[in-house]
Image 1 (cartoon, rainbow, N blue to C red):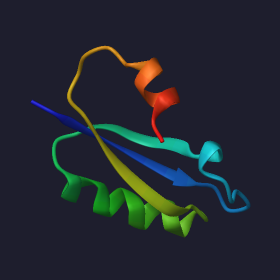
Image 2 (cartoon, rainbow, N blue to C red):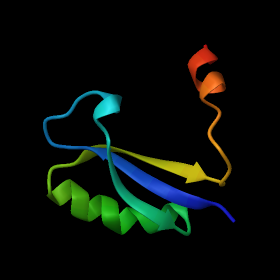
Image 3 (cartoon, rainbow, N blue to C red):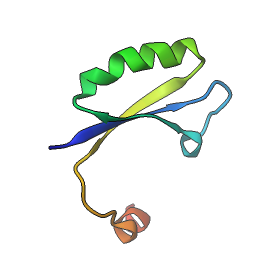
Image 4 (tube, rainbow, N blue to C red):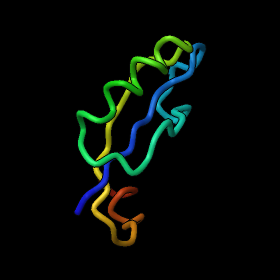
Amino acid sequence: MPEFLLYGLAKDATERWQEDLLATGLPTREAAEPIKTRAAADGFHSFRVAEFKGGQPDFAAAVLRR
């Protein structure tokens, strides 16, 4: 069963590589909504929800992706 991760940029951050991991183990994408609301009140913005299905990362595919 997949789990969802929530990322967001802090107040002064503007680049995706500056994202902070705000939550893990979320059962659904909708479970991220109340966390987004609280994080936005603390200055976070540009949220992203990612799905994690387990397994090992394929770094070569990530680097070679065009």
